Length: 71
Image (tube, rainbow, N blue to C red):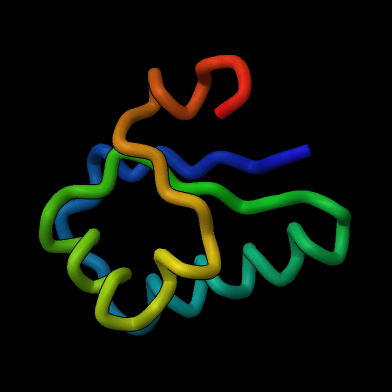
């Protein structure tokens, strides 16, 4: 199972937001789930890239793509 976070409306993310996502990921893993992200804006995508979050959570280009079978 997976939990999907739609980030389409997120224009800004700081260390607090990163911590919330990483704690959510840890909780998801404890429940045998994956935390996945979709529709990252350019600034948030860059932050996730710089901090390595994009390497621990799958990132989909859009919500539609994330919901495709096999995504």
